[in-house]
Image (cartoon, protein in one colour):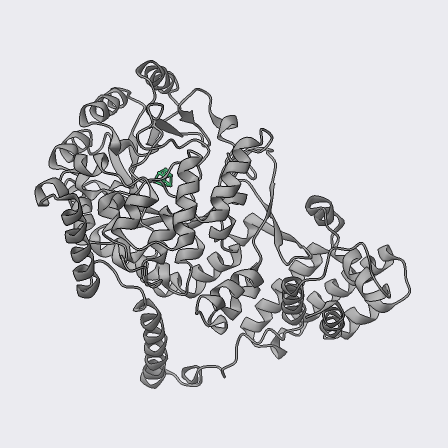
Length: 599
Ligand code: SF4
């Protein structure tokens, strides 16, 4: 669409609501228009409430929400916070013959505006079908009709979920076992070495040359890895994790796996640029301001994070700590004994802390004795009642979960006194394999709970993709715990998913699973402060839609009503661009169309 086409489209969108059109086209000062628009929207809201019976109840809710959002966006406070005035922007576009000096009108913006105006006029079009037949009956007849509807819904979700294989499925299991054999042949090893975690850590694949000898790489992948290595950007893949991938690079089931470890070119370029730029911080969570002593992060009253090791068997591209994570063989990765002692002493002297999350990095890369010594020291502190171990080894290096390690960890679990919890990080159903399941089961046999923290990235965000993962996680003994929005870091922009998609996934996909399976909370991590629970709409406000179609949110901190801290203003990625990318990757955009009505 050229500029004129876009302007014409804008006029058509505004004309959906005649009252809105009249206010915008009137020759009146801007502030008077703001007053009239807000009064009109307030009246509209009252009308919607008063005449609710004329609109189906669920369309009424969409309508009410859309009016609320539009009103909020027009508020001067929202404009001040977001630095953008939708009112001024629209007024100039509609009334100036040839608006210049304005940010260009984008298709992404038009799509947002169209949905917002349609929504506020009860025209969302979400509910295309008639009300279900069972509502007209009662008793057994209603129950049978309802059962038929529910079966239809279940079949639809199963059809989606079946698109995502798991390593427990016969076919993928066979493929992954062939891959394992090929890697063993390449290294000239037997199962003895393969089952030894130390062999894997000694043979982490760290350059494109070796990786290219084991799996097919695109020229883009090769180039990005080479550049990352040249610029000392941490990169590594365990031979085990490599065996989960499609060696032929068929661009099908292993895309979520590759994307986790093979950095895209723009990521590498931005990492290089950001590292050179002293003013640029990659510490999205502003851990520098929440670390009372080296190696400790504290964001909550009773919990601290202890980071004895700042590396992992393999490096995730979207890692929130990419500013701090070291290369796997780096001599700077481990915290020195002196610093570790100081950090532990700090915990000892802070009796308000009763839970310690040991993470990093991955603490299970430490030797058993080192881990034992940290756990023993914590166990001697009366105020510590829970120790969490944040580890990805069940996914990337399940061989690490040896009987000896499990004994080391589980001996500190004392029912009624102290709980040990393992928090891991499965991202996709293809990572769920018999070996990973055995690793998890070893902990479960000793009564240790294993939980999953998922990062919702572009690569696992297709319809029912994470629902399929949750189903399988429960079957191997892992409880879904948190689903995190990918951090808003520029270098990982291509991993980000609009907040609206997370909300849609929870309502339209996770909600269909049994309560024992959909146990995770979807969260947005507010820098410096901590988790904002996205499920609760009252914990955020949509305050702007920018000319490029990105939404701006104001997130409320968890301390709301407890302490007077600041809110956090966040610019999301555009829904339009996200859907465009999905379409390019073969998805049907109509399957996602309700996304626009999640705020
Ligand atoms: S396992 Fe966790 S800490 Fe390690 S690189 Fe991945 S996201 Fe970062």
